[in-house]
Image (cartoon, rainbow, N blue to C red; front, side):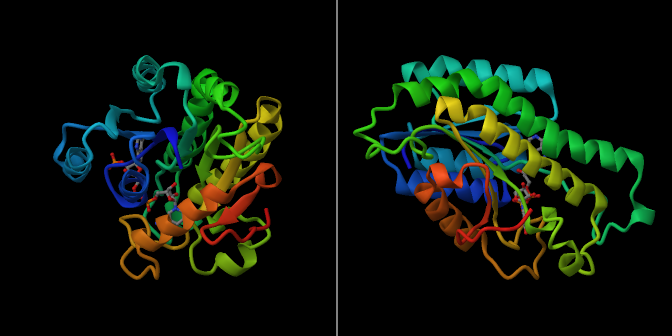
Length: 262
Ligand SMILES: NC(=O)c1ccc[n+]([C@@H]2O[C@H](COP(=O)([O-])OP(=O)(O)OC[C@H]3O[C@@H](n4cnc5c(N)ncnc54)[C@H](OP(=O)(O)O)[C@@H]3O)[C@@H](O)[C@H]2O)c1
């Protein structure tokens, strides 16, 4: 991976590990914009420590993905820094999952449905829309030699939406007994459609759009009994992202590169 990369929701969980492994595996040829709601808060200490470990490689950006004004301010801050290179990679990772699991229909109310949709779907939509000029700039300025002639890649210009196996309508009969999660599942199925629409829309600009399921991962959201560490999930996802090409545009893949049916 290389160039200018932006990840949302990076103060903990999968987002924090994404920033860590991106910083470890890229050098001065990459710059990571690590977004979080409250950069100064105690909850962002691990992220601040990480950015100190990689001076000049990580910039922390204040961003609440459910707040349009906050997105505007983040776009302005990043656009002042990336220059002519634009933004090569946008990873929409931030998400919420309420009410608490197993989240049956009886425990889910209108506000849960609205809040989850706002963060998990509207946020990624607005981020893609508002970062589009920078993504286009990256796609246009990328030299085909540098990219081994590939028309689309995460090195050139891409949007990766972090989805979930639970978004799969086809797999619902298998996964529903484990976790009902009406609001979360519906939002991620909508995120998949957003991915598919933007893949169609943005292919003319050579911007790759795909969705990735990180596996069931030990985080605040995934819980302690999850089988995968953030380290292994992110290692897999970054390998998948590095290998994505035009044929993967608009697909939902898991952290090992397997296709998940819609
Ligand atoms: N863990 C799993 O097993 C699993 C499985 C499938 C898919 N996923 C997906 O993987 C991604 C990361 O999940 P995770 O397990 O790392 O979750 P997590 O531990 O709950 O972390 C969620 C992150 O998103 C941030 N966030 C939430 N709402 C935000 C907002 N409005 N603005 C900015 N940041 C916001 C949180 O920041 P705050 O600290 O400020 O709340 C936190 O940094 C999500 O898209 C999730 O749906 C996870």
